[in-house]
Length: 166
Image (cartoon, rainbow, N blue to C red; front, side, top):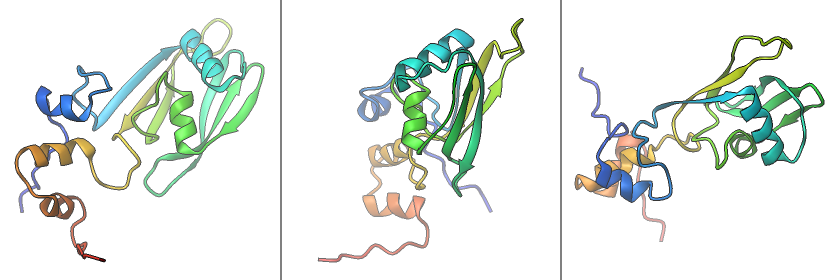
């Protein structure tokens, strides 16, 4: 049995331009992504995005994940304050100047600095969206290649029935 054709990892700038007109055009791979922050960057980002001064960020800890693996609640541990945030959109907005591609990520703390706090944090994530199973980029690529919507939906939701309800 061969693997199904994959459409999500396109580098076609025309298609990406249609789908990602408000996002960084140089980013072609949304299947797996990495975001790196220095201690100063993450502390300032979280302060600006949440309105709370956590001080030095000591840890970003998952508290709860959904069945898809996406973070639902996350604990921010700082030298001045510790707080659990969530749901997924709040997490995505707090850890990015716009919002992370998805809340399906893990956090890797960098080496400890002289003060014992991590000098950096790396977020390693998967996907772009809400995790319902339809890759927006892949669907756009299929549409650009002439696939009808019925084939696109069947590709992402095999076994589902399309029914007219009106």
